[in-house]
Amino acid sequence: MKTYLVSGGAGFIGSNFVRSIIKKSDIKVINIDNLTYAGSISTIKDLLKYSNHKFIKTDIGNIKKIKYILKKYKPDFVINFAAETHVDRSIDNPEIFIKTNILSFFNFINLIKEFFFKLNKRKKNNFRFIQVSTDEVYGSIKKGKALENSEISTSSPYSASKSSSEQIALSYYKTYKLPVIIPRSSNNYGQFQFPEKLIPLSIINALNEKKINIYGNGLQIRNWIHVDDNNDAIINLINKGKVGQIYNIGNNVETTNINIVKNICKILDEIIPRNNKQSYSKLINFVTDRPGHDKRYANSIKKIIRETKWRPKINLKNGLKMTVLWYLENKHWWKEIQKKKYKGERLGRVEFK
Ligand SMILES: NC(=O)c1ccc[n+]([C@@H]2O[C@H](COP(=O)([O-])OP(=O)(O)OC[C@H]3O[C@@H](n4cnc5c(N)ncnc54)[C@H](O)[C@@H]3O)[C@@H](O)[C@H]2O)c1
Image 1: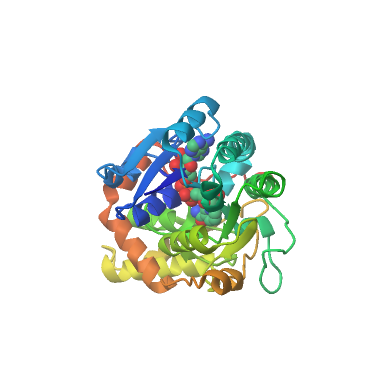
Image 2: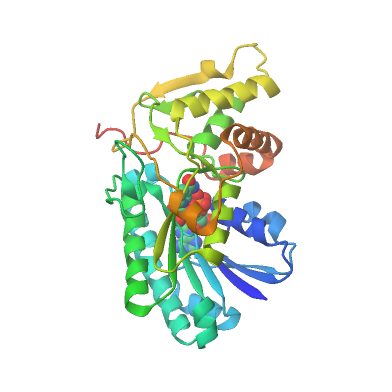
């Protein structure tokens, strides 16, 4: 029996990570999350029925509670998804990003280190701490693809805070031999993504017959990976990744934001045509760009393929269709969010431009 301590497991990627492993009978998941605006019980409702899944509401920075959880559940693996994650919100309110992604994270990893020190040799050898990070730490890539040892050049308070937590984690590997692995994922999409992010927000605005806002000229290039592929890569890294290493995760396909949105409109045109017979693409509306908006993210995934044999399986066309269908079939999930948490208003102060 292996115990996974998953933090941030009531958010988008974390909940899907738990979903992808929970059916195995020889594992146990302790899911901790302090349920910020981005995490909710409705996101993990389907997981609560599993007897090998336990949800505990706590902040990763809560020293007393985390100490208690580590002592009681003795995890074999810790996978940290907990973070403030929306770049636009980091422009409006950077403090919470520094607090969560750096200070609370520091408390957390420090307790994990204390816990790790007390393990016996065999447990120590198998223990892994996965600090989930982002390819946004490379900043905008002009030419070629970012390798794991490429220069760090953060553009937003979000990416700066994520890069800081990576550095803390790597220092804990070098100084204390804590077996840290850092996945740097590209843009994820899929079921249960909070509707402030480009893909769910565009789907929902289209369904609500609202304008679909595109920042700037929409030519920003991203490398979208389906969340199930991303989580499959993380599982591969837990099992086969080398400690103290960084691994890019992505899907090799570069797409502009405007292209993503046009594809969403095309899918919707096919499955749920508008009453006025026009394409949903008529709702596309170009707005002022995000301050500091990176033009292109592109990360090379050669290292993870070489070392773990992982490969992305879901192509963007199918993944987008699956995602659109999911938002169509799960209106109750996002309607509750729209009612109580976020109505779709523009975030990320634009007056600096
Ligand atoms: N979504 C992406 O495209 C993407 C890409 C690369 C990396 N990442 C990283 O993956 C991780 C998960 O991202 P996501 O998209 O699922 O984000 P999310 O915002 O959907 O989920 C984050 C979760 O963390 C929880 N949380 C926040 N602060 C906490 C705290 N102090 N203590 C405990 N829980 C806390 C929230 O309640 C939420 O459930 C993050 O670390 C993010 O930086 C995301």
